[in-house]
Length: 235
Image (cartoon, rainbow, N blue to C red; front, side, top):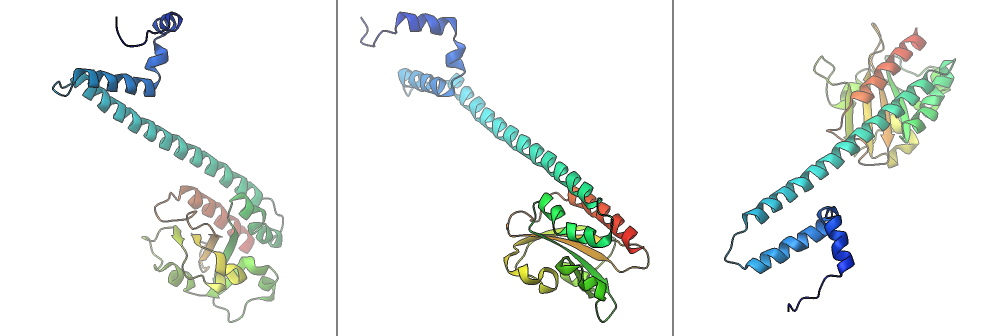
């Protein structure tokens, strides 16, 4: 008689009837393969076991890839929904003051950013009194400020969206909240022929929310809608 404990007859019959219980359990299968290798000894090369190990590794890699693809797809769908809601909210106001207030209010909340700023270049020495009444959301700067801030002159090769971590915050843009902004998205705006450029800035205290290498398609779309709305207000 064997010294190994006998398998319970009822359990044995259950496993024979439903072998997928073992086949679908990775831990049990690994234990069986390991026990089989020990039983064969060290002088025998089990090619089948080696092939199974390779297949197992490839399966793990495929599962990791699948999870990454699903996560990226979910993030993209969520991002599209946020942009759509923000655009609809941005189109609601009936006057420019409400439009600007919503920008750093409900629109910023919808996009899950901590602050939004509109930067307009101007050749005037002093800001118009009406601009001052719009609050911190709107900043007027001298001509050429945007090129200097982005570190890249205007031209056909310049991209429309800049994503980056923030080391030195510009008080002309962020005002009193500049000390806690850690990453930003800068969207260059074409406000129409004969007008100086503008820039929409989204700031957040999350260091990883905006960083180089991320996709910018959704932000480019949002910027395109925003600059068209601005052209109507400016006209």
